[in-house]
Image (cartoon, rainbow, N blue to C red; front, side, top):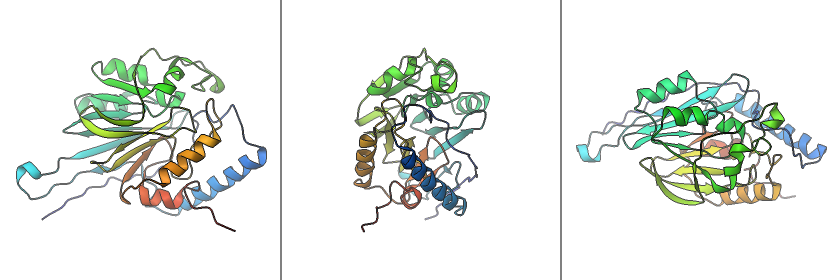
Length: 285
């Protein structure tokens, strides 16, 4: 048996996530300083470990087996916005279909790539912050047949500049597109069977998307390389955030599962459990 794996690896040095990091601060100054210190330590660890600093994977596997058992090519292409705000957009494509995760922007680079693979079958939104939905109208217009989904608890974010935090960033975003809504559970969308896991804390409707067959997790702003997304936003909750952390730690995921967050680069499950300060076991004194 021959197995060919191609990995396209890039490195990005991102100063931080702009998501709606201002407004509705619930933590004390000392708690915020502690979090910043932990995040800085994690960032330093990331810079020292080239295995974690991955912009995107393009994974193709072929095996010399009967045609009906050959595993089809699966590609995840990540686009990192570096103009005025931070946002990582991911496109999953295979013979099953083409999905776009979190249309934070939709400029020529993404539009040209999407056109080259035959257009989108679905657009999935992990949560309703402006840097995840800023390009939704453009993506929907360019792909009129694509199904579009967001969690029902974050639906109102689409047209509310306070909830989507655009007002805190100096403008008022009101998206015209009207997606369908989902809740936690198992779904078949855009040709794929996958699990939607509700992960509130960053927003009330935050979700992650687990594609077990493809061994891929799209984690949005919930689980990133250095930390779990802050609750310091409208509908955010530290209590929910801690419950989400425990929920994630109690689940089994393969060590080599690829994780595609909304900011700060891509990683694997094993590496994230090592670098993410919020997912590490707290020391017992």
